[in-house]
Image (tube, rainbow, N blue to C red; front, top):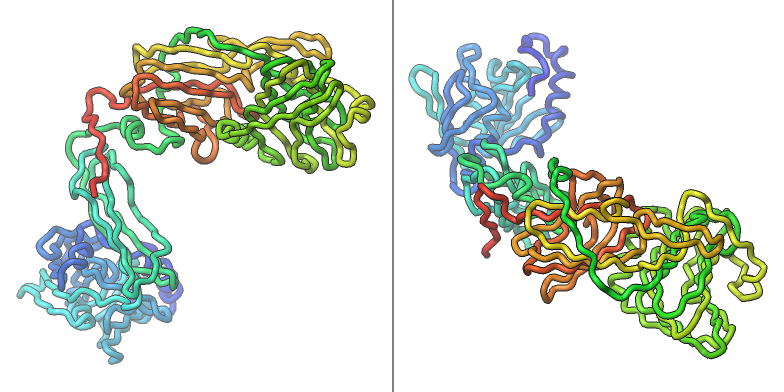
Length: 592
């Protein structure tokens, strides 16, 4: 740290505030090892033997090169060394006590240029401030540490041999290793932690400095670990030095495709330049989607949407409570047959209540894919009952429900928003208004609740576009309350049944193209069936930051994808070769 040019020590009153600021800024916790490995050596041997030369920053610690940020200097005929930097190289702690620096038995007050050894004042000239850095006599520093001291006859070179610091006997010890010392750019670094506490207390916190799982630029990197035990006592930082050199074995994208966590964002500036793959429609049983999203934020109790179904149907409702009072969303079923009819809920996902719009679709899909719902209502002719009832929604909070039903006859389904105090009875329903659409959102019955597509991957990287309305057309239907045709932009509520062939040796990611996206997918890869959260944390928002979905183990991947309510469409599924050509594609794993 250099805060001011070398001032005269004859004006301590002028120096005191500046030096106090310097000492407070240079807190001991920030004084880690220098990038030459000297502190690392001290952690394994009994002594550190440090050799320094006047006016040179390069020295040796235990026979290994070490570079100090500041060189020793000849000041007033004494060989002086920078206090903090030399202490770092000797792996000795420096503490700040009442505005003074203490190292071993040596106490230094730079503001007045004074030093004390074991409490005895030392003669003037043993302390100096040069360029804002505190210097002390090399011999006096050695005496303060009880270290051996030798110097050449010309006073140009000095060697200090100091015992390793005893440290705090109650403090935990930070420890870690790496599988190598020298890495190629793009090569994964494997870390093994093994901190411990002298009394067996739990290690409750870890703080890393400089840690990266991979380094892409050649150079020398210091990585430190500091741990805290359950008593709140911190260890000294433990540091290792990593060298990165040679030919690159991976790029940032290639590394991310191999090692990123599923659901994490990866960087790919070229993602929008990849060719789109052509998906072929496939035969599959289909059924209607009843979609209720208009008025999205009703301001009074009323009917949001209504239609009659027979057999299978999917329901999707997405609404915010704008009544200014607590309310609930209901989906009511009325048997319009002259015989009893069963209404069976096969699958259901729900988010309610919430004020966070992005949560509405993601939590609903995670709930839907995990659903084991199998509930049946038997309705007598004309009987009216709720197949869904939301929790109470406070003013301004929202609800999203995705529900698959099967009926054994014709059933009228009605979506209602009712203020608290109004029961969902047939008598109340007959008095409620049919709320007009808000003109911005859709509602209606759409005959295509499932879109089955088959894709053959022949060229990588490639993209499959979903929900853009062009490559992937929007489904069309009708608003049964008005008779108006409807086009469902984004295909929200449609389940995409995707079969992707040629997936062996690929990695799959999702790239948002319309804005914020938070959702989920269900993936079947051989015998593995898993739901993936997209993204794992936060939001996907940038096209060039796709979210890693899966690394297929087989040559055919089946994906169930439903566009998430409250998120923006379109999105692209991006297929990469898991090992980019031209580089070492080996995946490096931890072997205990």
